[in-house]
Amino acid sequence: MAPVLTLTAVQQIPRVSPGDDLVHLVISATANQGLAPEPGDILVMAQKVVSKVEDRLVALAAVSPSTAAIDLAAQTGKDPRLVELILSESTAIVRSRPGLIIAEHRCGHVLANAGIDASNIAQSDGEHVLLWPADPDASAAELHQRCTQAYGFAVPVIINDSMGRAWRMGTTGHAIGVAGLDPLWNQVGEQDLYGNELRVTEPATADGLAAAAALVQGEAAEGTPAVWVRGCPLSSGGARSSRALLRPHSADLFR
Image (cartoon, rainbow, N blue to C red):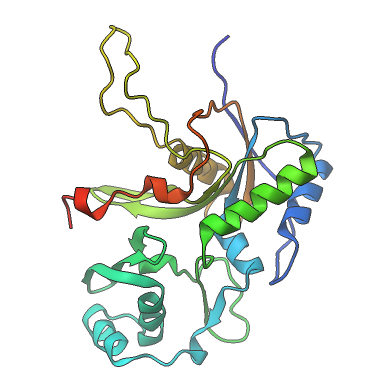
């Protein structure tokens, strides 16, 4: 039988507020849609909805920029208050130019503005931005634990966000939080079609699923932050966090 991979967006998840029970909302909407998750299914959640329930919304009016933020803002043309948040969420500024700051987030991921974004959030009472969860892997672990308890079988969870990529235009979904699965599939030692031994092959399963789910979630007004994935084989190497996807600085030839 030919392999089949299905991705189904969960409809009718209401807009969330800080402190909302995200697991309850997803489970209820899943049931109302007539979906019945099965062992082996994977839940992919958009970062924004996780950040919202974790109260990671910040009003720029409440931010006082430091001298370092003011200097970097002058170089990049960005709001000094936003730059202050970028610095506070980062361990390093990797690159900057007018209109762009590439930062290494405290969790190790490298991306524009340390993941801080202003899209898909209400701006009715002043300008706000949304930060990543303080620890996306911990957020994924809690979702994994609670979904597993609710369904009675292990439910791997991926939290994804859209990022740009070096040397490529456009954005794709990336896994920023992982729980209940190995984000990498180490196939070193296996053989290809011609019997050659694989020496470096290691697909980033979690990133592949994060990118596929992002196509179903959408980037605008779709309102479908949760996606159930069925039919994806998973590595038997055991569960690891999203940090397994990060290239060590010692092996990074481009910084």
